[in-house]
Image 1 (cartoon, rainbow, N blue to C red):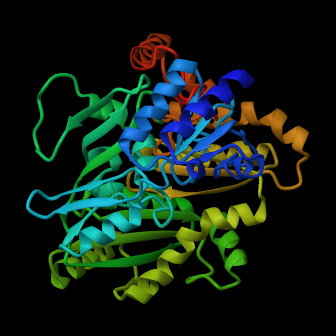
Image 2 (image 1 turned 180 degrees about the horizontal axis):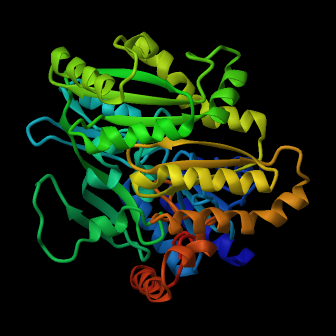
Length: 463
């Protein structure tokens, strides 16, 4: 992008937007050069903070006219480089478009702006006895627009599904600035092509989402958490299979392997419950009343043939915080141990999780690499983190492409694919051929061309 294009864009923006929301200062731009992706950055040429769909439309028209890259950004919690201006251009931050516009109790929907925080949406729904179930680990800080962009999931996906299962309406700005509205508050929709499912997970490469209508569900009256220790990861994952094939449907089934437990204990400076265990399962159960939920818990105890005295059941908010603290702290503990690490979120069929993990552990041991694995055992979404540690930066960067490919090939060989909830972004783009054939990739590129013929929306990402 030329200096002339930048200067002209700044002049046009300052006519249509207040000057304080058009940023050209290098020091401020550098604070938006990173997200949560380790060891990667990209400084935008211009940073803008729209407050309305009209302003987003004006910004898109300017970028289209001058052929300037336009990169949408939520709260910067992504881990695949999807919200970075890796080719310069204009970074559009949605953080000021953060309103929860409506909780419609009669139609069981929420209408929100893309910058709204995911936890805040659920808390607003809670006031009406409703629930927004998708709960990424960063739900206290991530924005709903970012969740929609990557099709985010979370622990509750095993019972309730992911973000894409709750988006029923979108207001979007196209690459040329045109505004389109898709879906609405209605439940059924068999009108034309399904563009909403196409845009969910498109990572800002097809359109800019400015308003989202979300399906809500009645909030369960009660819930408990069970922390169950195991002597090894194999027994823990075999237990997941037993629960899955039974008629018990937990709200969440999370697993933490031995290395994850040790790392979190070190980071928190606290002894974990059942410190001798080599794996933990964290099972959340919910239902209409205490009796129903406790009956489910007893059924799991009986099914797994475990001693009731060797499990921890959390019923109060304080108790639940205690059992979830370790799981919620894993990523932070990893970053503290090794600020540079490889974070992958592969997914395999639930029955193949054990095979997948054991194959990767063998691979990493052969390479003398320290890895942490944890995740959503109930839906097969495994988070694979490999720590750089004392490896030199040059050696680390040299091994990354082959290391990523090994992880992805193992996932695909187990019947899975290369991303479950974090998206493709920049980091996984080169490895898409491992999961998709060339005909499929070409079809995706033609879709991109149809939506964004100039290629200005989040260039260099996904396809």
